[in-house]
Image (cartoon, rainbow, N blue to C red; front, side):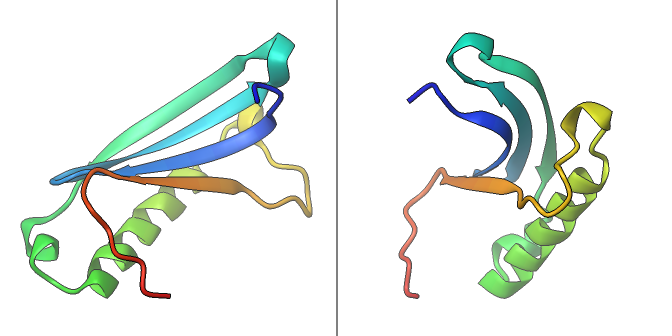
Length: 95
C-alpha cells in the first residue's frame, strides 16, 4: 500500500547464496528511511543435505544479522520483527 511503517526484514534465498535485508520504512511520506543487507554463501554440502540443515544454517546467519542492529534499527520492547521470504526456485509447502 505504501503506508507501511517500521522495521522489516527480508530473506532472498537463491541457488548458491542468500541475502538478508533490513529496511526501515516511513510510510507514504517517509519512504525508505534506512536499509542494510548482507549476502551469505551457502556451503556446497548444504545444497545436497537436508532442508533442516539448510534452514538451521539460514536461521543462524539471520540471527547474526539481527544481532547487529544499530541504533537506527531498534525494535521497541515487546514488538515483533517482521520477516518476508523470497525463493528463487519452486518450493512445495507441505505444512
